[in-house]
Image (cartoon, rainbow over all chains, first blue to last red; front, side, top):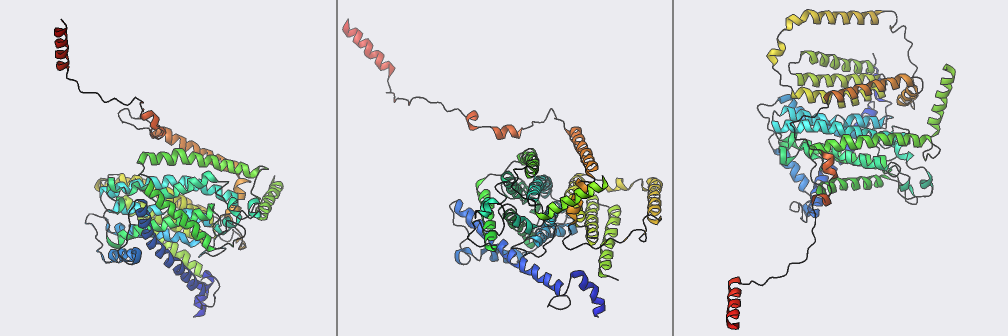
Length: 375
Length: 221
């Protein structure tokens, strides 16, 4: 028996205290430990959103189910679970069911590489940032497939808008990330965070001034705004556009299939907030030297960005579609391209505030040596 | 047999089946989605070869961007499936010829003595810390910097060409320039005129005034 299982065990890594499939089981446990609180966060983010927007509009918000309406998300979830999932007759049935699944799968899969503290991640992989870019770029499929499979004009229009908008803003998002990985010279998210904790200000105990947001301020702004656009949140929510196209891609969905789109949207919001906190606000690093680092800082920063999401929704009217495209292509893309060049030149100049770490310096030496040999 | 081999066969079976469905699917949207599945599994196979950079970039570029645009176009096509399937037999010889040529060429390359497994040395196992993203970057920007920049330049030209081919302004369309709208200031749109507060006028009955004046004249005379 163990002879047959041995290759499987080798593939998943050395077994731990949990039996022969230790590492596989351990991975599953880690996934559950990550996803269960995430789903709770998603549920309560809807509650927070209604409360925050309510108070901004001088209303009370949900206050009927449970104390302060705290059981409202659970009531909503139960209601949606017990509703019938209606599949329209003219729809493409298989894809109609696949749509919501493809919407939520990437937004959960992306969480695999998010570190919550030094080295605490489901998968602490080398190319973490690339993985995130790849997975988040697949989120658009859920919307497109759902929109097309519904066989409805409104849903289809929503899908078209989603495809164009999300692909456009990915470009700016990608360039902003290139700046970050230039300065930290790593694609590993843990390394990116720890690289923000060094420098002149960090040594003085003013860590928050050495985080990426200050030297990369334009990229920080671009990233945050593109993040809002990527998640199709107001003021970039033309994909749903209730006033124009009813609800876009989800107009034909009901019950839990409908809820999955919302789960995906809120999970993406949290993801973008965590990413912004990790890449630009130093993740779990403490803002001042005399306070210890820890997960609570990451949670606090994430909560702040989530509040920004809700704040923006309550503040701005919806963008018109051509204005969205203009902002993405004619404003953000040029700014980010120029800033990539600026950061690259800055890093190579004597004024550089980013010291190349030993590893990359060594790699540069090695490549120079190999050039000499070959040349 | 290693478990890795099983994973390889699993991924490649799905990949080959999906690739077959790309050409056999009747609905072009389904075909595009099968192509997405094919790319995804190709990425998985590259991961098995521990080429994580290539795998992720394949998913990012082809699945995340190129195929989305493909879908975008294909979904908007109004396709008559009957018409599409017409002329299958007349195209078959040409298609068979091209397909046969491709198969022969592949057999020549793969069956030749240059690419056999026995010719290629097994790559040495890399350390855990080894990042092939960094290795690829080092090679790309040192040894192959000119070919790399040349490729980038070719892409740039293609991009400019595509834009210039499609960039035209229709006379009839009522085109709105968003940059003008965004740049609009409220000072330009609305002028505030300062004027004195109007005085409250007494309502005067002109006929009565004239009559009074006449009466005064009359009394004066």
